[in-house]
Length: 245
Image 1 (tube, helix red, strand yellow):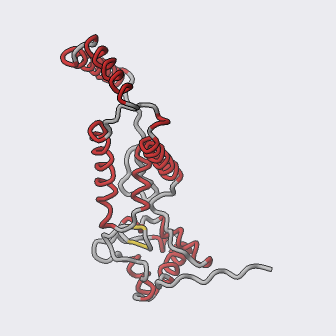
Image 2 (tube, one colour):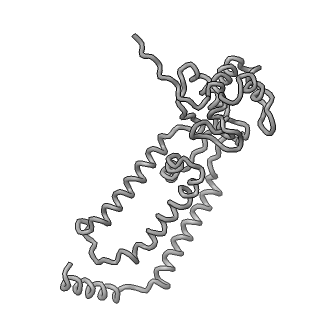
Image 3 (cartoon, helix red, strand yellow):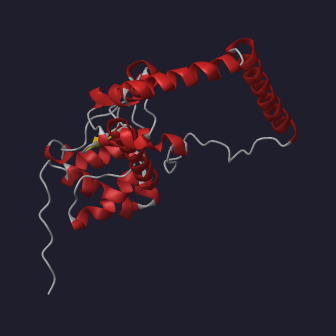
């Protein structure tokens, strides 16, 4: 845009500005009225239609998979990508805050009069990359498995025990590989520190604040598979299975 075009743009902008109406109280009143209408509609729908409610919450279940709303899937996936616990605030607070601040400051650092997308390659590239990144992360978040999934590589003979450990909610307190909580001891290399008999006794009795599991009585086979899997966790990668004939 040359100087003559810029001056013409400023003259047209000033003329349109003089024909318009002030933001306060005209625009503020319109926005406030519309917001009030929306709130009234929501209240009426809540009173007469009610809200859909699912089954009663069961705090003892180990099969519930917590998931955010779909518009938070991209942030949910960022938390899965950023593994170290000390970087969690960066994903939950830092990334969204930086994005919002940059968006709020957009009118101050992008003051160019040009509005043709073809003449603003840097701005359009940044916008496309941002939308594409959020879209891709949203897709990954929607397709992601449950947080109880154990991603640590496992030998085929211990795969059944791995599924039992995941289904029993052990990752809620213990960490195995990159997934899990930190309330209990890290189980990634538990097999190199504790023998199988002690693991079985701990699972059955529940030391300290750990709950006792009666899996040995209800499903002895699954209990044995779980103990064998935990005893196999020695921090070494399993050997790949030999190809069949």
